[in-house]
Image (cartoon, rainbow, N blue to C red; front, side):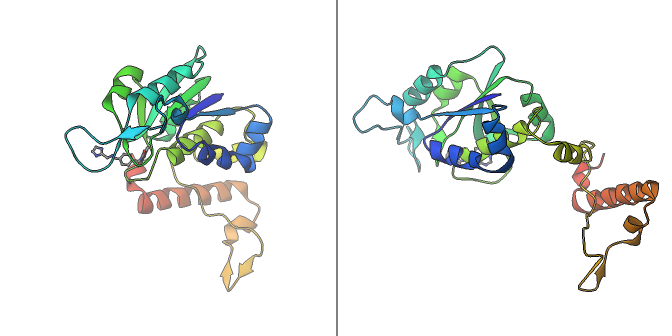
Length: 223
Ligand code: 21W
């Protein structure tokens, strides 16, 4: 899977790929994350990427030329999708992550502090994605969320243990409570059922806990 990220802060993207599972995925060639900086495509000597909004108002707006030229410099392969990270996008959910994992290339447009000139949308026609209803300073962290979530769906990214874990989330319920050693800590004991070796009982206990937890914390996830 190739990820091409258009960003004014390429280091924000590359820095996060140096650790843990994503590092392993990059090193093994399962994913390839490239960055393109629209600032490198500016045509004026001040390398200006934004300007004040027509019609007035606070803040700045990202100019179309550097973004469109940067976008057109990205070599698109056959099975490719382009997404724009924006607070107005479709909310990112596990279903959308699975859908994105079917592509061979994901091109992502990040803004920072400010919005995009609408003509960037009109020309590039990206799918627009948000990671939730809160305001961030830019699209870089959301792009990293997409890279992270999509990468762990790709064969060869997760080890056996991690992918087995994934199965229990697949049905849309929250996780069951987990315990490890010691059997008692500050007077708090691990539930007896987990120590009795009866795997049918253990599975029933865990499934009950998952349903209870989901009802309490995320009733919106219960159908
Ligand atoms: C924050 C960009 C606010 C634009 C009138 C019209 C990408 C994000 C972002 C940001 C504005 C995502 C304006 C969840 C997020 C992102 C930065 C508004 C001013 N005034 N998902 N437009 N939350 N955020 N621009 O913030 O780029 S995905």
